[in-house]
Image (cartoon, rainbow, N blue to C red; front, top):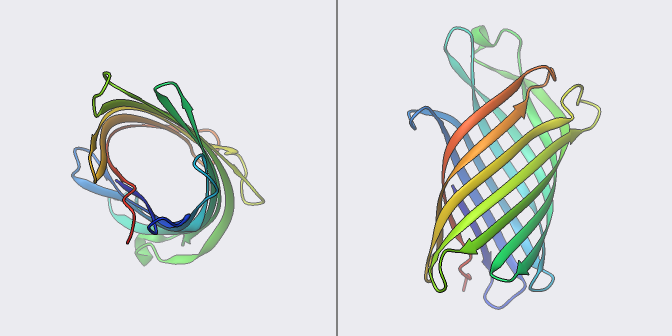
Length: 214
């Protein structure tokens, strides 16, 4: 994963971009690609507002073992609050998404997963992340976050609770570049029926950068 928040020089304005490649198994099967550009505005040192667009392509698995692409387009708006507590740094992120999820024809195996239209859903996400240096002056640090997602709107039937992500990692800051994190993510997903829960155990590698542009 790459997460970038890049201000325009000394301006309060900047650009956001994150790109994620999600794999199955031991990185042997492509499961999902996510691209999320946006625009940031820093209200002050602790408050940032952002908005943008996201494209997600998921490889859905059919009963016969074949796969097809299921696209999703999103609009998103968010508020970030930064809260230092001693040597611990907290980040609260409140994000609202308008999701347009590809609806694949019922005979997907015969049509190759042709998209027949899009279903609109809304989703709210609350993310809390804590980071703390490991040692007095070390560039290494520990990180933890939890993110809760809930869906709402006319097209949400039984899965108001969408998913929860819990993450723990160690990171290292590189001067002038950003930071690299390696950690474990537990994702709990409620499927649309509301009766089935999916548990995904994930090794997560992320590069984070906030280098100014210009």
